[in-house]
Image (tube, rainbow, N blue to C red; front, side, top):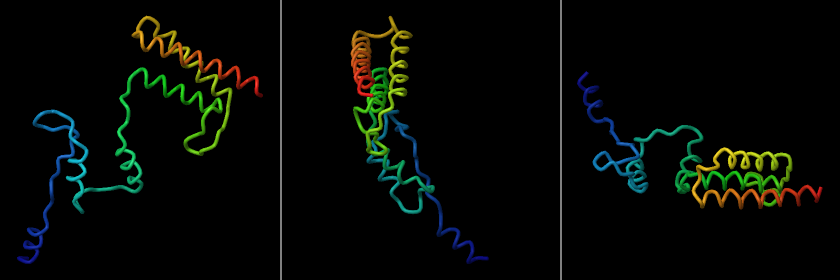
Length: 143
């Protein structure tokens, strides 16, 4: 019995603060600090397939706002118009029906947000819709 108690005392556990903000200041923690704290072997738990999401977290993502949302929708429309390759396959795969739907979604957003956008967002919506609609007409003519 005494041997078992000694074994339990030698093994212990480590408590790590994994919050994404500093409890003292409330500021976001630096990723380098987080990675150095979780770098100890045996103290972090990983699940199968967690290697790829961890790698994706290393790249800082752009701020999410209305403009980046509209640009992401327009990028999808451009991909479906055959203007750029699908990032997953690396192939240009035009699909004008899906492109038209994406353009219509952006048009609907423009109508629903009219009067609520600042000048830059309004100009972005106008420019994106004009460019996408012209590219759509060209893509349909090519068919």
